[in-house]
Amino acid sequence: MAEPAEILKEIHRLMRHVSDLDAKIKGGPRALKAAQGALARHEEALKKSLEEIKQHKVKINDKEVSIKQMQGHIEKLEKAAVGNKKEYDAVKVEVGTVQKAIRGLEDEILELMSWIEEKQGKTPELEKSVQQAKNDLARVEKENQERQGAYIEEQTRARAELAEVEKTTPPTIQSFYQRIVASRGAAAFAGVQDRTCTACYTEITHQMRNELVQGQFVTCKNCDCMLYII
Image (tube, rainbow, N blue to C red; front, side, top):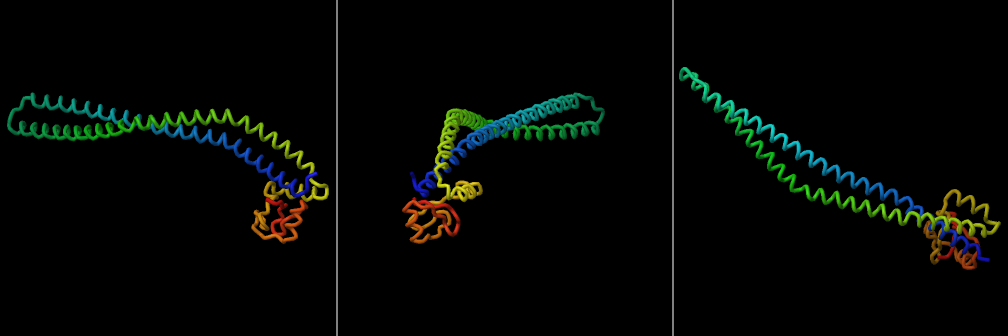
């Protein structure tokens, strides 16, 4: 029969193994959610960019329509009959005002076209990011499907093995064992390296180490962890 210290060492190993598997099992959905979130963000960025390009094209179209209307107004003014120099000068001033407005709209159109050209130049990069995010999501989904079942199966085996090993703890320590494990879980155990408790880094006595070497049940006097030799 294994000595108490060896039993505790094996229990600690199994508890950490179960905990590690639990982290992997929980990490699967988190990784999936993160990949889904990344895809949604990239898709939203692409959608927003394309929508902005569309809106700017609409603005260009509206300004072009306004220019055509202004040009039509100028044509009417130039064809209108004038009775005297005063009327002629007034028409000339109005034509100049409209032409200035047209030049302003043309400058705005050029700015919008430049903005669209720059934005469209970035579209392939945004589309590439979306595709990469889709590939990442597909990879995570595949890994989850392949690994999650194996992790759960391995954890079930480890829990069963842990339960069997726990049955071998000496009756004299079971009450203390159950109480401290219920409170602290895997943190209730600590390995001893040389003469140092690896949980609180307190040095144990030579006698305590000798007792551990002999396989006896020993707890750290500082942190109460159940000890075993590493």
